[in-house]
Length: 134
Image 1: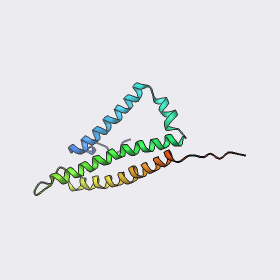
Image 2: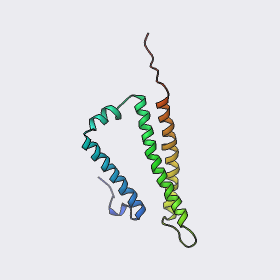
Image 3: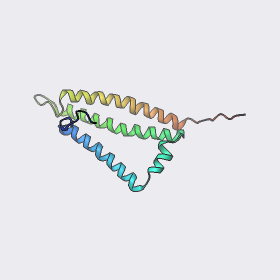
Image 4: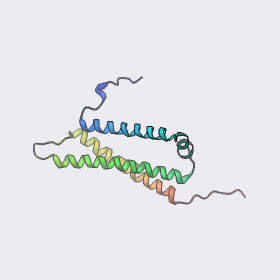
């Protein structure tokens, strides 16, 4: 079912392992919180399947802010790498990993943050006129 997935496919360096473990921890914490609050029905009926343009706009903005935090983490990793790599010291990231972070940062900031905020604010701020049958 999982193909050639083995333990060697999981990250071995500390930066990647820390990022993966923190994402898993946050996801499990969110699932535990929603389950503890008994809000699964409310979340599904009132938000995830909503057709209200204001709620959809707010969801766009929330996802854009979460992606902004991810993009800021990528930027901090890149700046940290540039700060400590001088002379014979090559920093804590190898060149391939730095290039991957650089590309992911640009993609996330343009497509998920900038466009998500624009679409979210358009949905939040523009009035929705419904056509009435006469």
